Amino acid sequence: MSITTIAALTYCIVASIVVAFQLALALGVPWGEYSMGGRFPGKYPPRMRIVAVVNAVILAMTGLVVLSRAGLLLPRWPLSVPWLIWVVVAFSAVGFVMNLITPSRGERVRWAPATFAMLVTSLVIAIGPWTGSALDPTR
Image 1 (spheres, one colour):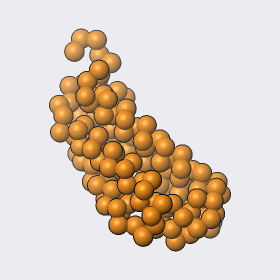
Image 2 (cartoon, rainbow, N blue to C red):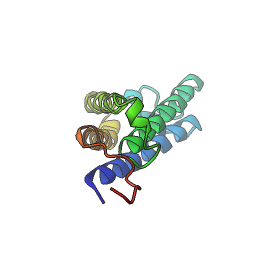
Image 3 (cartoon, rainbow, N blue to C red):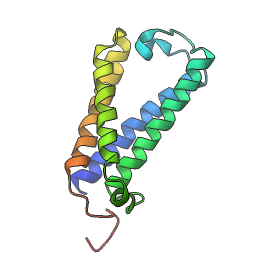
Image 4 (cartoon, helix red, strand yellow):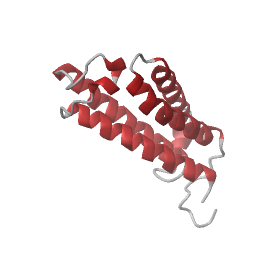
């Protein structure tokens, strides 16, 4: 298994955890103190639940970009939009910084390591060679 494949799978596992957390917030689980700087402790208000769903969708889409760039899904897509992986890297970098500077200690402790892992793995994928599908037996 290549380092790119390991990085892509790691990114997607971590992103899936964050997506599940965002969806839980959207469904009313009272974990608001661990998100958005702790400004909404307990259950999110209705408008923030919509934000949580949007966050989950964006994160799921970054996972698709990562899997595609790693050649694990939609292997020809990176050829048409090769810059998208850099959008994921930038998004991960911003997320990491935001989780480092949040006033919520609980958020910092839980999500800074997760977003750091997403940053490192997306960077590994971005700077690594794209050689087509990892599932291609001829490579």
